[in-house]
Length: 355
Image (tube, rainbow, N blue to C red; front, side, top):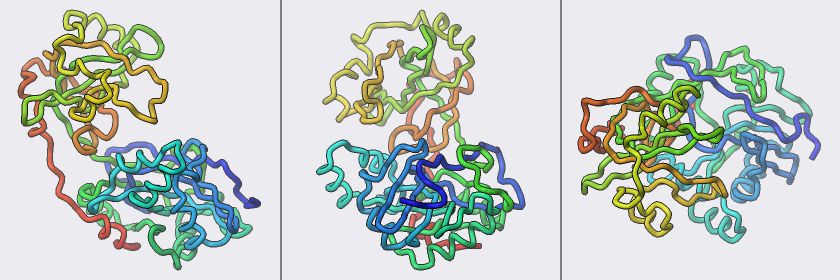
């Protein structure tokens, strides 16, 4: 492979802001695996956000890249898997499997798509110093002959339209909106774009915690919600406490410490139990040898957390602690409090085009 921008490349990143800034290029924020795709003839390398190779996990995209992208190019985009008209991150995660036979089977049954939203090089030309608006024009031309599963990400400079996308596209599983300054060069591994994500709050039962990697202080609180059958389901964690607060939480939660006997999540070490309920410590190819142990607490305290959106019956990302809720009873922390997002078909998102 001999390209003006060689792998590995870490992608340009975004920092969170509360509202959509004016005067920029706007795109939907995709919920998948960020990927930098290098193509030089038949040679294709797909790199992850950290620069690690993803190529072997998506053989169908290697074929699609050869069919749809220019013979020599470097493209920034997102790998996604869709199911029932919306993005499905759980099915996407299943694609990362060590067995080649399993990878081939999943490529057939849960095929991935590549959503292209930036270009770093075409032919012999590096575009790293080219302004965003000009790179967009090059990208549109480069993907003029693209066909599914390779897609050009819709983009607009109309802030009002971007606000509509922010409000409507969540129903198709998208994360929010990304804003890019029009004169911005491509700056790898630097937070120079802006992301605007959905945020909601929920009252959750705190039923345990994990220790921080630095020592015997709280790393994250384990959160639960009661389902319609009255079973406490593990829905995620909240973290990002200052170090001093982590130490204080150990003492604060000490009166609630208990053994696993009689705890709603007592069967967490039984791999089979995870098939019937959401429990902490679920087996995962991502966790590998990571210590999944946790400290059990009597499920008697309630906290309010901020979250972005749900992936099935759990929080898609780590939630953010807002406050304790001594006025709430654990039994009232149910799924019923969560806002139900109106569904929106992914095909309509992909057909939006430039605006």
